[in-house]
Amino acid sequence: MAKIFVETPRLILREIISEDLDRIFLLDSNPDVMRYIGVEPVKTIEESVETIKKIRKQYRENGIARWAVVEKASNLLIGWCGLKYLTEPINGFKNVYELGYRFLPEFWGKGFATESGQAVLEYGFNQMNLDTIYACVDVENSSSDKILKDKLGFESKGTFVDPLDNATCFWYELEKEKFKKN
Image (cartoon, rainbow, N blue to C red; front, side, top):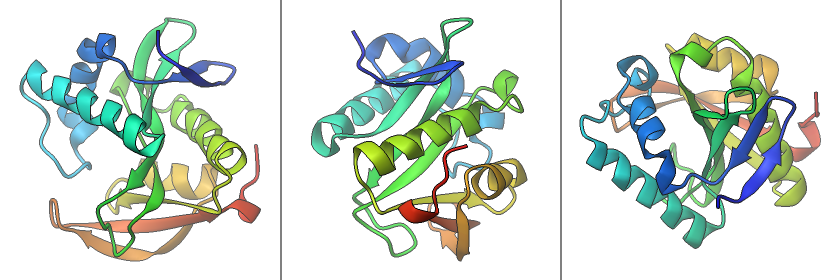
């Protein structure tokens, strides 16, 4: 049974478990979903098995990782959202928490990234007592840029080049005292 961390009016945010394999593969093999991620879409189900193992390892080692986002109405995993503890440097930052999310295209534009992101930020600031949470997004991903800045309240702190794919990305920061629950 997966541990549930947060519930919102429309969503359940819980651990990602091995039973999520087919939906994680559906998500990570979709070229539209992976367009701005910096890695190629997965080609085999075995790659998604490894993804789930890595996430489960992050739960054990860091106490937190990305969470499955399950839509209550359909009981389907529609994506993931959560905090990742950055153990490798990104934009010169290491040992910090980064907000990330990824959703299947049929669930884009319905407020799920904002709803789950808000819940994750609230958990990070209030349950984990974090002072600052970071995020980054490819400068060409205007939808995600808008969610982070306009919907979740992140402040842009400039750009950097992601060495994974040589893409220019915005770097964001949100401090606990500037976080407002919507």
